[in-house]
Length: 150
Image (cartoon, rainbow, N blue to C red; front, side):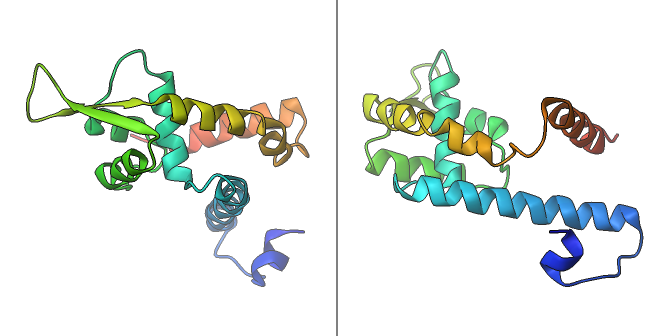
């Protein structure tokens, strides 16, 4: 179904306006589908993002370093980390070199959760499976180009 039918709007200022609305609408659609998968593990997409960042790091990260790597830069990283701590999915310690900072790491329980979610990667990939490899590459290049502004 086209964007016009999905949001019941037939007129846009121009193709650039339609593209912006389409990117926002599609982003929200994808997040909603991801949310359905993550709800089974009782985590949000922001928590999932932080766990993946922690798993991919070779050393502990401060909340500032985590925020810099997050997909959603507007997230309250400290609050999300606290929720992960309460769930036993992350751990934090005072940074030995700077007592004002904390070092955050993923726990074995956090790694196990990501392993369970990794087994669902085929379902996640299915969200974009109606694009062939060339179309997915083209979409990636176009989205990168969209963000490449001075």
